[in-house]
Image (cartoon, rainbow, N blue to C red; front, side):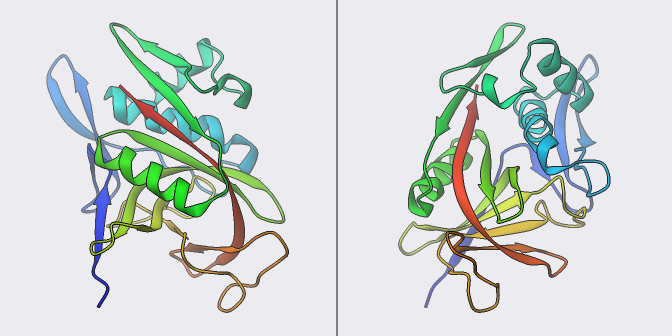
Length: 210
């Protein structure tokens, strides 16, 4: 019998809203993590938004401060998200590593390792309609085999979650065509927690680490 283990990104809590640790002069405290919504974030804006989420969580910074820091340094366009690029935050630096692969096993393995080592990552995939970046907040692992079955995601173009740290699921082992309508070249299930679903294709994973 398959036993599933959920592993979540370090620094998050989600007993009600999704929150993360922010460090300040008065110490550390939790703040709500801005999540976006279908009315405020479009697919074309998803990359900079998710990058700011990841930097805020890793650097324990207020989200607006992280977003402004990235904007000042030109990290608002996909072209700056190069493999090996660094984001300097005072004495600390966040390193970027791009995993350019459309293979579910490769993306799952890289995302699982990132989450378990306290890193943040964001995955890019496309449907027949658009391409989007989404923040990875956790993984679902088969505890017997160690394989990552599902990425647990915060999609800034989807509805906000409550009592969980994800609002969508990307099933790496499922195949579109039964519960989810399939189209040529788009073979993975992408499910929203509100019941929406689509078929998608992986494009890559960006891992951020201190």
